[in-house]
Amino acid sequence: MLRVLACGFLVADIVVADLERVAGPGELVYAPRGIVLSVGGHPANVSVDLVKLGVEPGTVGVCGAVGSDLFGDFIVRTLEGYGLKLFIERVPASTNKNVILVVKGEDRRFHVELGASNLLKPETVIGLAERERPEVFYLASGITDLVDARIGEVFERAARVSRITFADSVPPHGKGWDYILPALPHVAVFHCNESEARGLTGAPDLEGALRKLLGWGVKLALVTMGERGAVAANRRRVVEQPAFKVEVVDPTGAGDAFCAGVIWRLLELGLSASELSEAGGEELAELLLYGQAAGASACTAPGTTEGVSRDKVEELVEGQGRSLLEKTKIRNLPL
Image (cartoon, rainbow, N blue to C red; front, side, top):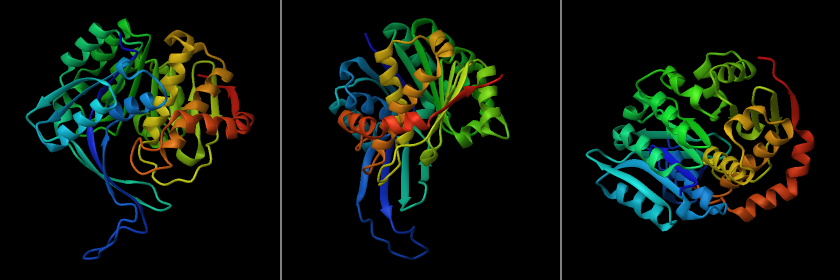
């Protein structure tokens, strides 16, 4: 039986990290850390990170679509190398690719080619969830057009067979944020960053966004804010936690590693969706702590997953965890 089934878009990431600047027209800028090809896309990154955190590889499945091209071959071969259970569709389209430029001290610049992931079939995702019955069903959407069109049905069916349903997204292409609203009553955990939370909800501030997400049916809302930390909210509490301090080489994949850290703890704690809705501040603070430690570890090396390891996460928690918990703010969130 699968413990985790991670579905959605798969991407070949071409990462240029630690740049002094982005080249101007006609200018040559050298890449001090080289140009790295790595597997990307939230489901792939989350799955690889889970294996690196110690989850048995054969209990983690990845579902997505790639093209019959060199980049599709690379994604399949790389994921196979981690021992993951693959449910990959080969479709008549180019594999999604993303050129990521990372300038020192600045946020990442993404240049995305859309392709094969838009052809992932919702019937494939639903069928896998019902057959495998994973403890955690994770779906990343926004650029998976066929799945996005039936996302409410996908999550409703997955919620029948999985203890935890976990939704993640990128800013949607070719549609508004309202595409995801039918899914939210069936979502136990919803993750996004602060700008995505405001874009989805239309709220002027983060607290208003959290209220809307919970009012739409989400049991636990998680919002990551980079170097400013992360926030968790359920119907009882809102928890604000500062970030770990690490030397940032490349923040690409930090959000995915955060999700992997949270899922890792959820697997160990065995909480259900209803229990997450009622969980106290201390339990939410612990989820944030391990999620943030995994996210921070991802920032310490170029690429999406290279910096993540269980030893590094435990070292961060041991070294900085008590201080972060002491600075964590827990309060009521009136809905």
